[in-house]
Length: 366
Image (tube, rainbow, N blue to C red; front, side, top):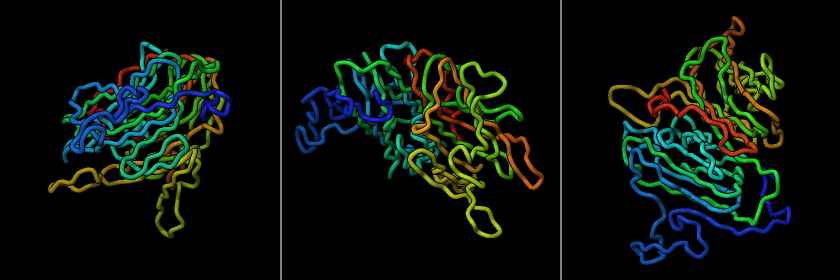
């Protein structure tokens, strides 16, 4: 099975299905049956409405053998001026084949490379975000017996409307071996000097690391991106097998993303199929208030997808990044607010048990 492409070139013929509000079970011939203001079968139930605080909504519960090929979601990013972090208050959770623990448990926006509770345009191979908050994922997600996708709301208010569609194919069987999709979120609100930030740890088994998203708010002045991304593979302890040359280098940029404007450095954003720096802002445009301005610590979002250049591991993997800056006085150790999503495939689904996500208030951006 090709992890990063459809299965059909390999002679495997399946049954195409889709789950959304109009067909919540994905059953054949059962789509668009609900009645609406225009009558039966005329846009009767396109979305979930008023998703309650503290609720768990089952987006999909698929029994059988198959592959999820595409997920599309859109939702409001706030419900009031003060409750404006919907994309971090909603949690996307995925469980494969009756495993005990989720293989995916990530704040909704961060999963789609949109940290800080704020959407941005992303034009990559596996993740695409288009106006307005059209969140798309093309990571193939195989399963042998069952696939469960859940939405957990920790938002203060009911979420008025949640639209989604999950496109998948059912098969009689899948070729061996099956690698299950995983994603994990992490955050350190203040990193420790001289201690690398952990993107991923505690993963044991055989797998393929396929991507990193980093959302960074700088807490110190001067250039922030000299930290090197490190991959510790199969028993590496003190030093990694793969070590990059800098954070902006890891996402394909160079020379601080600087534009040629004289006298003032200006970072340039970009988005490409496998790497990008799609988001920069030092302003809070999610809310307005008569007694404070919109300044906030600068926010930067970047991604690197290792699809043409996957990183294989046989026994275990640990991924870290240094917090190192640069000024007129040279390199220096620094502290920032860093969160991240690691994406990988593993031969077992949900075997890794992780610490629960922190409370929603501890996930909010500064």
